[in-house]
Image (cartoon, rainbow, N blue to C red; front, side):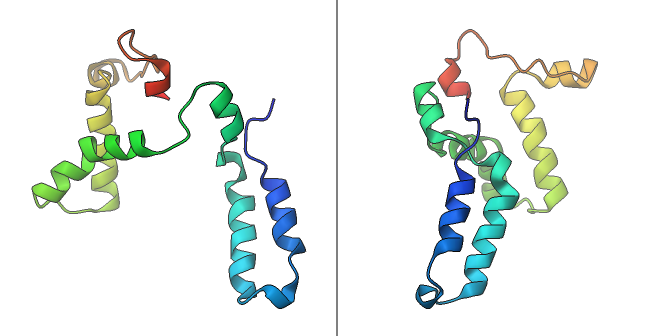
Length: 122
């Protein structure tokens, strides 16, 4: 079963491009390195489609808007890496009903509530 996207063929294709058509070889090298580095995280959209998972990021963007951006944009909070990251984690725990479990037991169940369809949680 294919778990990640076809990065190998994409890299092979990029490396096979005729250099006379490449305006900036450093950009091409950057793209190849980026793909190779991110390979484990590149999804296989065909598999996700077969499994009825979403192939777009708007649920994630909306979650970010609900959890982090709204508070920081409208209340003048700073965007420090540690502050935003900590705020996002705690807000996500609260939003997903896991805050108490984390604070008391230091555990997150990683289960989908019965009221939430699997595709929405994915």
